[in-house]
Length: 225
Image 1 (cartoon, rainbow, N blue to C red):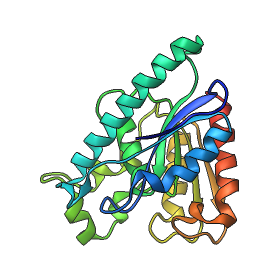
Image 2: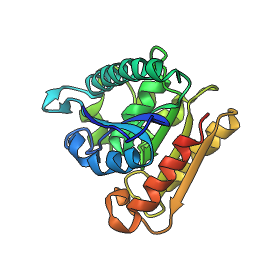
Image 3: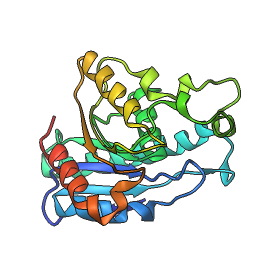
């Protein structure tokens, strides 16, 4: 886990997970994002997980690692919050593409994660749209696409969520993200989708979009719950 601390007391905290289709990527990819978040007063961390074919046999093992990293970050943040006498600061998770997908699953399934906010960059929200041959390599035996599809797992009381995505994304289609936002709002939860016209998948790494995306993330995180 790579941790980036703000110069003053944190206004919120977030742990982000990298993308790469569960087969590639590392926390280093999100170091620039965490640096920008820290400059905005956010305690930010970039974390990884076992990759398929590199220690993980299926997505469930990737998810277990994400849960473990989130629990570790939550414990450290709680200790810091107690020192600051500010235990109610927003505690967020999220990430890019597959990392955003895993962070979503961690907050929507299993025991309460304790995270009240999500910040997602072009996340996979509908696993039923993933190519069958790709999905087959990721699924745990006996599970279905719906069982790992955040859009199909939403329930009232989901964490407040900010999504940043491009309208030309062919991997995480904008239509799926609009459906995800609409489902969250219909359930009475807060979800903001910021669209970038013509932007493709992983657009937020590009100089043309980076500052706007991270400014939006800082603004969302520091607005509180």
